[in-house]
Image (cartoon, rainbow, N blue to C red; front, top):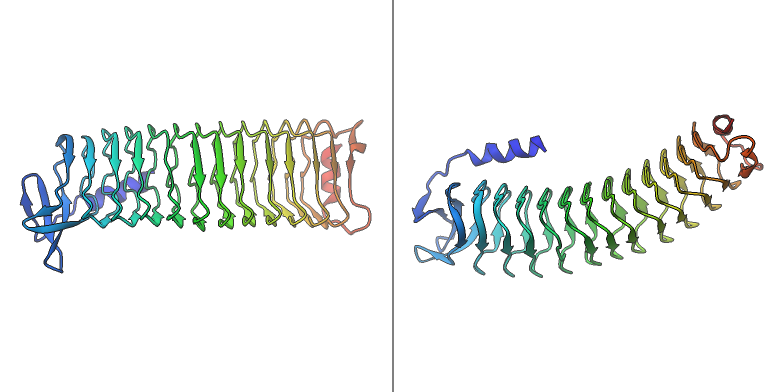
Length: 354
């Protein structure tokens, strides 16, 4: 977080060469000579404002980078339909801002646009928006709901991180890529649906979403990234679509309420710590497609009473079942290890049961 803030501050302190003023607005005439960019606004301004559609007879088309940076006493902002572009961190640290509507003319929400707008409770994203940038709504802690329109194709890393009052989210079929940690720390999030065009749930996407109880994953997802659901302690069950081939490191680590998970026949590898400390998991069926089980994959699964490991598995990492106390002697017979294939690391895993 500190590096983002440093970045924003360093840009905010730069001067505006060739700038003019009208009232409280600082602006520059664009190269087309018929439109202007708003570049600055006083940080001590208060209340609600309506950004004008024209200044000096020219259309306002751009709200520049950091234009309203740290205007902490502004409560609402109306953006005219003439605006087509909103720059990076344009409204970052507007901590008193409660609502804003993005007009149909805008096509992208850039990096850090609403970064740490703590009081923002609602925002309307127009159907024209195709991308939501990195940290765009980072730590908007009062935001309770947001609708991602079907026009959006990409969502940047940490776009909604730490939006602790956000309760539900639907990622539409139009979205084909998301960055790391998009909903990381959204502790109030209870339900999620992932559209059918997304191919990968990235690292830490839902990490720390401790209230998440249900999730629907689209049938185009091929991999569950590192720590994607780490710490989702209220998640009770999950069904992975047949498109998934990889479950990566710590993907479901600490999902302590998880009682069942369906691993499809398409999965070939289960990463290290993938289901570590899933203490409510009682049984799991590993399909014949799996060849590798990583280190500590099921470590600390104290409720696990049975597991079947097929002959397709050729590698089991160290401590894969460490701390699975319900599988330890006199219960070790409940774990069925492969007999027909040369498995590397089985001795370590068996030792962990002893």
